[in-house]
Image 1: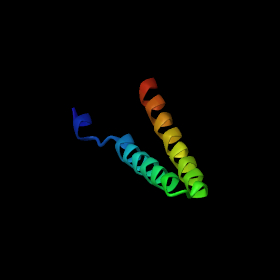
Image 2: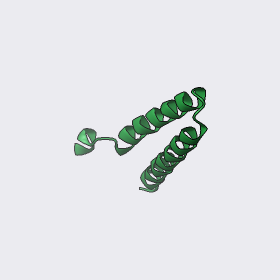
Image 3: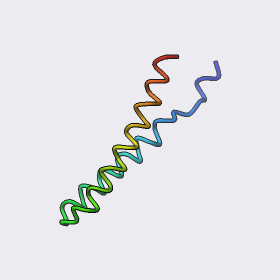
Image 4: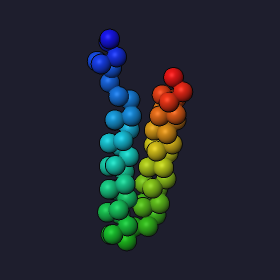
Length: 60
């Protein structure tokens, strides 16, 4: 019954993932390949966290 008021932990991470991808795209367009690589790596780490949370939710 109280599960309705529970916040979605992946929502914030998905927003962060989206922002990182956008920043990475802009860095690539501006020719800053090193920054693009760093931001892409950070986005990949956030995606792994999202996948872990979703996998844990699927098990329960």
